[in-house]
Every structure is written in C-alpha cells, then in structure tokens.
Amino acid sequence: MTSDLRYPIGEFTAGEAISPADRSYWIDQLRALPGQIREAVHNLSDEQLDTPYRPGGWTVRQVVHHLADSHMNALLRIKLALTESEPVIKPYEEALWAELVDSTSPTPEVSLKMLDGIHSRMALLLRNLKEEDWKRAYVHPVNGKTTLDRHLGLYAWHGRHHLAHITSLSRRMDW
Image 1 (cartoon, rainbow, N blue to C red):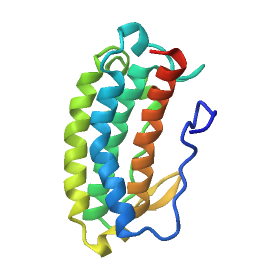
Image 2: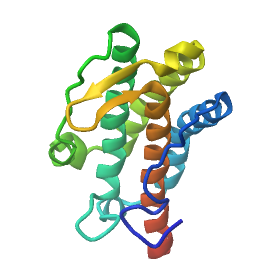
Image 3: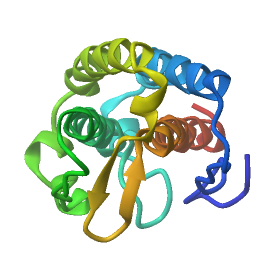
C-alpha cells in the first residue's frame, strides 16, 4: 500500500516474462474479486457509498459500477483477441460512463451480480487457453498492442486497485 490515494497499491507494472504460475495467480485474483468487493461494501450506507474515495474521485458506488463496465469490456477484448487477428478495439469514455444514471444510483449488488458472471466466464476461458493463445493480442488505438498475458495482469491489478480504493477509504473513515 502507498499513501497515494489515486494508486494505493501502486501503478500497474508487468514483468517481461509472465509464467503459467503468474497467470494462475492472476486468474485466482480475478475469480475472487466479486466476493472481495461485495465484502468491502456490504455494510455501507447510501451516504458511505456516495463518498468519493479521494477528493475529485469517484464515489464507492461509481467504483463498483465502473468495475462491471470495465471488466465487461475486458472479457470482450479477450474474446476478440482469440477470434480475430489483432483486432483494433473501441475504447470507451469511462469517466463519462461513471456519470450515467446506471453508475450513480443503483445498489452495488446490480454490478456485483454482473461481476460474478463476468469473472466466472473470464476465469473459465482463461484457464483453458493454450500456451500460444497467451501471445494473441488486440490493438488499443491509444495504448497500442496488448497481449492476453499483459491483459490478464492488467485486469487482475485493476481489480485490486479499485478494491484498495474502497478498503483504504473505509479504513481512513473508520467505517
């Protein structure tokens, strides 16, 4: 943990060589994330859910709904990379999505149910990839080529990153 409220677990870094053990660990992290998020928010009031995790940041509620939006896109990117030759993916305006009513008003459970399904399917798909599949990639118009190896590491980090936003706020606020 760091004192940087934007990056409480630090920024994402990926090693050069990603091993099968790394992949298995990251898939386990993805599989566990919905339950960890559910545990982190289960006793929070609406006022607490509507508290930003940092000044100028999203509320806890928006963070949970963002995870569903983002990881839904992550699953689609995996499927595109597996079925097309280095497809160019369409980015989305995550900050604007976070302002839509489906990110600012529903109970977190709506997105936690989505995450349960998304992560179950993602884990099943990823656990059954062949070694050569991990080098398949998609192309992000801004970030460039991303292999499935890097993609997995990024989204495992992404889940932990936002979980830490919620849990570190809860600790700071003594909830």
